[in-house]
Amino acid sequence: MHRINDTLSSALSWGIKREQAFARNWAQPVELPPVTRPKPLVWTPERIEHWKRTGEKPGPVMVWTPELTGQFLDFVKDDWLYELWHSFIFLGPRRGEMAALPWTEVNTDALWLRISQQIVEVAYKLYGEAPKADSVRTLSLSLESADNLVSFRSKQERKRQEWGDAYVETGRVWTHENGEALHPDWISRRFTRLVELSGLPPVRLHDLRHLAATLSLLAGTDIKVVQEKLGHSSRQITSDTYTSVLPEMMRAEAESVMAVVPRDIPFKVRTSLVIPESAWQGDIAVFFAHGAQRSGDRWVVGVQTQPDSDLLGMITLAGRGQDDAANAAVKWIRDHCTANNLELVRVETFSDRYPEEQRAAFSLTRFTIARTESPDLDGWAPLTGPPPARARTTRRAPNGRRKSA
Image 1 (tube, rainbow, N blue to C red):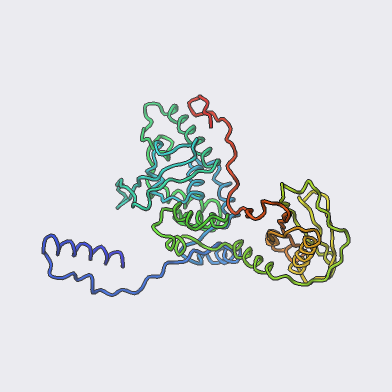
Image 2 (cartoon, rainbow, N blue to C red; image 1 turned 180 degrees about the horizontal axis):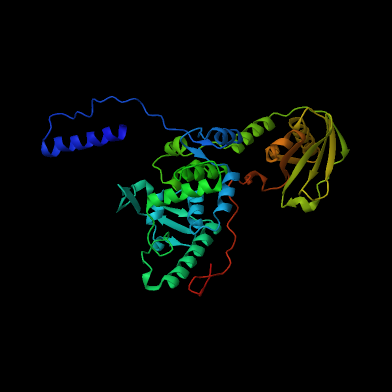
């Protein structure tokens, strides 16, 4: 209703200024109820159970968890448009932008694609137009996304040879097997059908934009980067509309807050902590404290650099649960750092990584420590973004020539 009224108001204003056809803009006095944007909701186990029992969606905008997202990608791995669904999930484009994307705007070696045009659908008729100024953008590609585009180009080339003269040349990235361009509405209907066949809780194609934003935030990406990725005019739009909070983010925030306040949990050192030189990467060492409930309130906490590596030390305690085990580990490591002139840089709790039925009996905490005598320590900060891009190997192009990456 607001959009219709805005359109009428714009048309009437034009008529008053240009044609003097109206004496007054009658759309301006119209009062409409305020609009509240629907907040995306995550498909938690409880909501999935309710949906299976009643067939009702908890809200109009739903988002898969990373686990459900992985299940969908595994299900559609043999679909002709697998690479397209992968791009929707990890790049967050609009369907009209993907339908219009030409190969001339894709560079799989430099790892980017440029959104510079879109297709809009009105009464199922297609119209090409330039996106809004804020939506013209260049998206960085991961190695996997770039390889997916190379793979799809190869599939197109094979179909071009199979169809021969009947193949439709459009120059578009995403096409049917005979080369015909994809209709935006067909993309949505195809996605809906695949979700139905997968048995996963329903999400709309447009909801994958919410999912892409949420996964980026879960990976620690700054909201400004997510805004530019989605092509929004302001951070506020991205924050209010296209982000939702995953249970993993909520849990990590809760655990991080708990870790800030040290608790005095009595424990006994069974094996003194010794950090070998092999655990250090320069002046930084990262290791895990794994706690397990033995019997009753008795807990054992051991330190390892990897799940299958030797114990570096062990403590026991009488605790009420995984929080006590984690707090005892923090106190133990903090005391060790104080006694050995080390600095405890970061504490992260990963107890939520265990299956729900096992969480009460296990705890997992990651520690990052540093040698305080290091002259470079003041300028060091823990990494929050993705690791540096590794060198790409040489890849064979679809036409048989080798491309240096």
